[in-house]
Amino acid sequence: TYRKQWFKQFRCHHHLFLAPILAMTCTLPQLVLSLKYSCVDVSLKWLLRLNTSANLIIYIPQSMTFFLFIYHSGSFWDTFKKQSILGKRFCSKRNTVAPIVKTAC
Image (cartoon, rainbow, N blue to C red):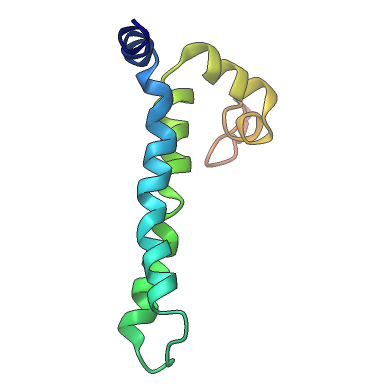
């Protein structure tokens, strides 16, 4: 039946639903806070801190998507290192913390 086929496909591709569901889950608190406290007095520092932390929570899904899918996959990681600007900059062999100083023997 259609339902069995749908569940079979969902079980095969359930990992594709992880990032969007995580993004929606992390965005909901910000939506609630922005609708509830749209006009706030600046003297309420706890509310400003809560709003700032909610804004930072929004970016968790994007970073988790990178670590879940790209970092653990060999082919995606190699493509990231070769084609992206960040990959070329941070994953190159010449990238060191301290400069290499050659000494005469």
